Length: 385
Ligand SMILES: *Cc1c(COP(=O)(O)O)cnc(C)c1O
Ligand SMILES: [Zn+2]
Image (spheres, rainbow, N blue to C red):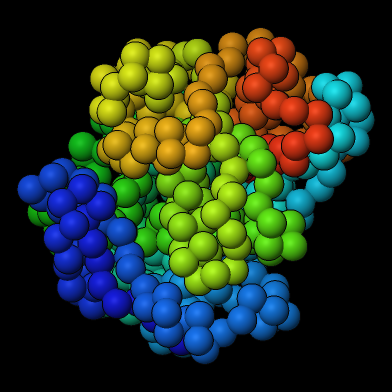
């Protein structure tokens, strides 16, 4: 069912064999992208048939890397609701404001999409033991998918990560390693263990398939909107897999002929506590300079130097989008408004998108009739201490 043909470095174009475990393009120090036979997919499949399949991200199997249907480890991820925000839209003067609520995914965040696909593919390629650094949610997702698949997982998490993340890792029977410092410190420890012990490292963009799972958010958006993509997508950005994955989805959909060339403006929202993408957009750079990394109520956004910086910045610029930083107070106020006005108990990262939207409205960057989608990347329930 998968039409995966190979892996390719988006910087130098070099092609890599897909049916063995791969990491990155060493010469460019870049993530690898999965490539598919889209001409074959367009001939064999229609968007109507994909829409009619049973719910969940595996209905996009032709555009995902897992070849053996028996290796699709699932907990019911994907096909999250697209909800209109009528009260908040009215307050902001926007007629067509929506939230895509990723909080209903297994493990409570969109990280489930990436880990479902990446772990399934890794097991198909022979992985027997998994490791990841995490700010919290990626670790919770990997721990649970590893339990589902029946392999051991090692999770490296900063000691100050939310208690719920530590609890879900332990509950799933994974090995929890609490690290002094930030996710970058956790990343160094996880990488060292991965190479000395032969574990597969699921760190953001260090393997090619988490981004494929996240890509399904973009595929679903097309389907949700009747194959006419919305004008604006606002996404809380940490490592950038969601933003880069959706941009890749739009490219593949256009090549399939399932959407036209009109694509959303991609808006990246970060916390003022750690905003490397906002800084790079402001200075016009195509690489990120490591930002300050202060604690924030939105730990998923605390990535001082994302590995996929070139891909993130390119997607934002090609889309005609922008990047905005919001304060801790604005994030808290947006959390409260989403819950009280709309009944959505959002995670701080997701609520940050509403704070970002306020800024865009104030500066006149969004038209009243445009379809605007906020991504709530997780449920607020995961942040209770
Ligand atoms: C990881 C995470 C993010 C950031 O995701 P990227 O796609 O890697 O930028 C945002 N929100 C939540 C809740 C997260 O767990
Ligand atoms: Zn390369």
